Image (cartoon, rainbow, N blue to C red; front, side, top):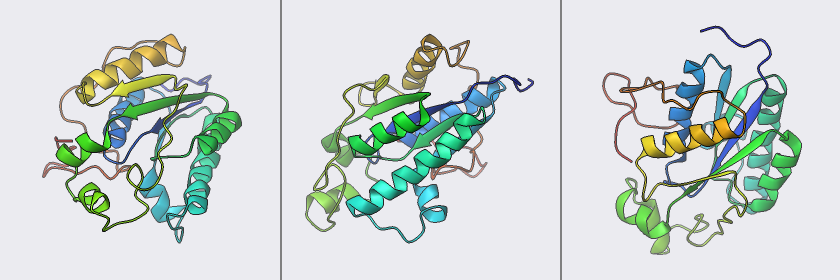
Length: 211
C-alpha cells in the first residue's frame, strides 16, 4: 500500500492508569495505521523517559516536563503528516489540555480501569500491592492523583472489553472523526512488536498475550 502524499497528521493521545492497557491498544492501533499505508509513529512513556527525558524523576514537575516533551515531539510529527500515537499515563489534566491546544488535531483516548481491578488482575510486578501497602510512594492512582479526562473523544473500558473490542471502538470513532476511512480491523492474529513499547514478547518475537 502506498503512503498518502496528502496525509494529514493527527495525534491519538492515550491516557489512563499504569496497567490499564494503554500500550496494548497503542501497539494494535500502530499496526492498523501501518496496514492502511499511513505514516505512523509511537511515543511510549517508558521509552521516552529512557531517551528524551533521561534524568527526570517522578515529581509533579518532572512528570509535567516529560509529558510536555512527548507533546512537543507529537506536535512535530503531526505537523509533518504523521499519524502519531502516544501512551504515557499523563495523569494531570492541565498538561493534557496544553498538549491538545499545541497539537490541535488531537484525539484523547481514556483507557478506563480501576486501581482495584488492576491490582487484583494485572499487576505482574506487584507495584500496586506495594503502593497500596505504602511501600512505594508517589504512585499514580494510589497516593498520587490521576485526573481522569472529562471530555475525551474516546473512552474504552478495559474491564468490560477485550483489547480487540476496544480497538474496534477506537477505529470506528477515528473513522467518525474523519481521521481514517475504514474501521475494519486489518491485522489479525500474531502482531510483530513495533519495538516502541515495553510490551512483552514471546519466543517468536510476537506480542505476548495476557494483560
